[in-house]
Amino acid sequence: MIDLDANATTPLLDEVLDAMLPWLRDGYANPSGSYRTAKLARKAIDEARARVAALIGADPEEVAFTGGGTESVNTALVSLDKLAGEGAAFVSAIEHSAVIRCAEHLGRETRRLPVDRGGRLDLAALRENLQDAAFISLMMANNETGVIQPLAETAAAAKERGIPVHSDAVQAVGKIPVDVRALGVDLLSLSAHKFHGPKGVGALYIRRGLRFEPLIRGGGQEGGRRSGTENTAGIVGLGAAAEAARRDLAETAERLGKLRDRLEFNLLETVEGVTVNGDRAHRLPNTSHLSFAGCDAAGLLILMDEAGVACSAGSACMSGKQQPSHVQLAMGIPPETARTSLRLSLSKRTSEDDIDRAADHLRRAVEKLRRVQGPGVGPVVVYTP
Ligand SMILES: Cc1ncc(COP(=O)(O)O)c(C=O)c1O
Image 1 (cartoon, protein in one colour):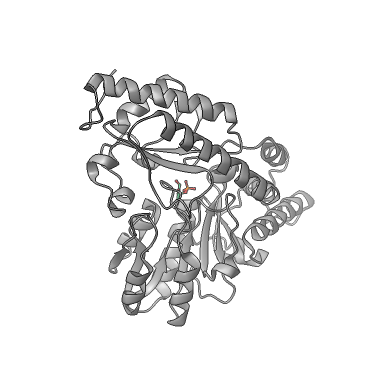
Image 2 (tube, protein in one colour; image 1 turned 120 degrees about the vertical axis):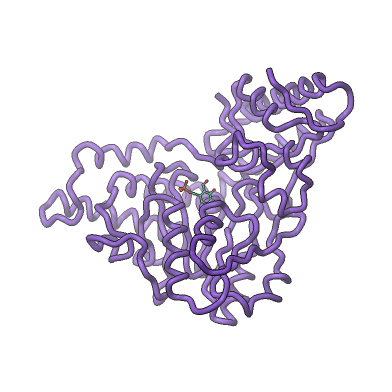
């Protein structure tokens, strides 16, 4: 299988698996214990914390481990909701469902801020309405389009009014530089499996001095910020993935950016009616979001799967659903075009050969769909093999 669905998840790096294995086998002691093996587990967790902190420019004490990105986001929003004063929860219209669904559940007004045609937050709209905000949650990079958001500008505007800011940086961390101090955010969520770490483990950055209430209460682990016996192997895996990401960040970003551009160039050259969506000047290097005029994405996905290529229409959680994604609609992409869009996303494992073969398969899939429908790139057709 050629895997071009890295924004859904990524494979473990060998070095990550190697780091985790001892903690799955013999290093099973509860890190809260007072004996030697427990202390070793505690030490491994603290090392992982330092590695994650180094990746995002935080101090280790500002990092709490969670059971993944969704839990990290929920923890942040629930804490903000409990401690913030009156006002609305401001989120961008293109947030992941982890943010949108959680915000809508809080019981206060949720205001979805518009984005421009390129998929970036409309800063003017934010500034005009800021007096109504209790807190803000703005993703750092979008999972579908890869478009990087004006997070530092948002945080700076919010700070003037004392409004706290959370960022869902699940798609950004490990792919582009993330520095919580330079960004000026109060809370930031990340998830290991998006950058070659294990699933079910993530972290929440909590700025020192920020008032915070835990979502999960119990034995008081993670300094009381997230109770529950620590997932030592998972946390060590996250730490190893963070270390590898930090070490290779610039090189990987450059390599993947070139591969992504090669893929787009190839498709734009050889296939009629291809559109690259999203602000090309502000994109994750690994993500390409494309529309193929007249080709239903569901049909393309079937043909690509048959050809041995994994990719996605919209975000992973939307695959299989025929509704155009809220992200594309918010960008003003018409529903009929939105239904023709694919997301192709690359990881450290992606090779040039993968890219060239995938582009070839995609060209043939588009041609086949259009043959079924007849010449030209007319209305949307749903292909059933
Ligand atoms: C932007 C974004 N936020 C949050 C999540 C959820 O992370 P997790 O799968 O670790 O719960 C995802 C995963 O798809 C994501 O892309």
